[in-house]
Image: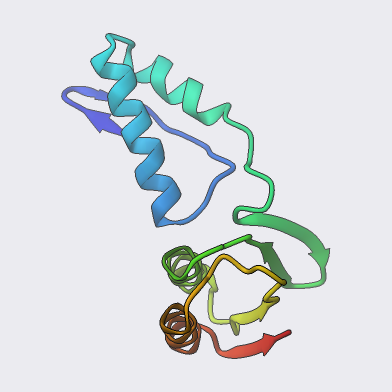
Length: 127
């Protein structure tokens, strides 16, 4: 991350464009509060992963498994778009459960969610 004549490298447990933008916003606010760039980057780097949000599970041969509790079409779209960019030539499968009382909501929201899933996923399993 560069700001003015300062540059700092950052490692993070979070992935995806939305998370990157949130992290950059947090660093910007920290710097507005007069923290140094290096200190701001260190603080954001220490943030723990959010359970159920782009949570990676490893150990399944060469497949990456990511759990994301996306509750609306905008989050579904953001998650799938980020994962599609990271897939490294593999297939993106979306396994989605619609629980009782799902927060996706109206028929129109279900339709939008379906279009987003069809756009970004190679395979879909809906339960």
